[in-house]
Image (cartoon, rainbow, N blue to C red; front, side, top):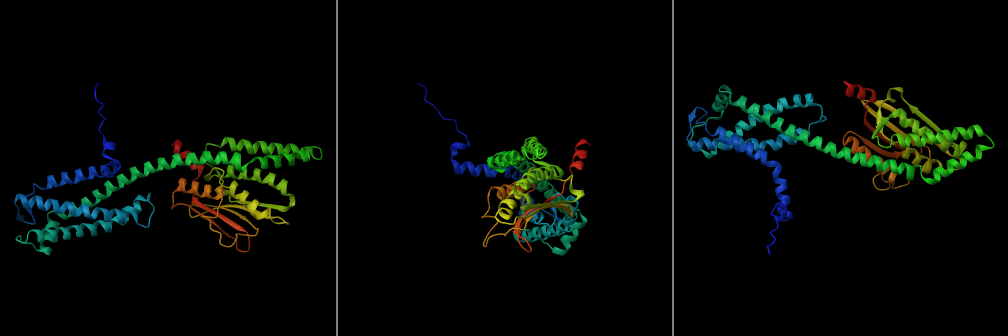
Length: 383
């Protein structure tokens, strides 16, 4: 009988060794690039006007590229902290012009000091050597290396960004699907449908025309829900149409107790917004702000643009937030799902979501994210 020999792979090394190996793999191309440059430049036998031995030449090459290897994380760290957006490439280029000059000179002087320390017998003069490197083109070469380092980092960063974008898109599709199911199951939950049908039945004999109108609105509401179930974003005008149909039934339910105001700027109607992003916020406003009040109240939905960003607001004039309320802990499914969808779609820096007490009373919910025009998106896709 043959003895079974298990295959040897990275997993057989144990979870710690496998994890360490996986973390080192992305750095192997950079290590290879560093070793290649050291080997290519180690053949130089003249530096700063002096003849070098092979050992000194190799030492100088290692020092030079090690200095760049040490400075590279600092360059990357500064680039990530620049006060500009990631996709503003021209502004990033302008910022890096003085930085490239600074790091080039810094590399030159650090290289000089290390070389002087390792080779005390070489006759080196800092000012003279800097001038000689400038005249012989070595300083310009170091200047180019800075931009090579930045280009390599930007390339890897862009590739990682695309990968993260795909992951976010997949997560967003999952959240949109869950939001659709939540809309059918929780938002348009059975008691809402029951109340809608009950309201319709009360008008069948008294005002049949109103009953027919309500049935049409209910059909349109469900049709919109199913039509855009798989769309991560829709036009604001379609989102407002969905909210208005939802508010129509709430208005019939609360009658004069519910006052509705919808104010949407015309230049925002074609803006893209997350699908069904407003309905759970409107439902919260009615449930917590209007229903508890004997005299009812006002629910206002607003949309406007400012500085290239879209602002959405849902506000009520109810009793307001309870003492000690926190928007990160004391929230239900509607608010937590809305916040997560915004983060997945626009990232952490390009959007904001706030829940706060109104100036006089009530609760305000503000959403701010980049304004993208659906008409422009279509024209770019066709072009």
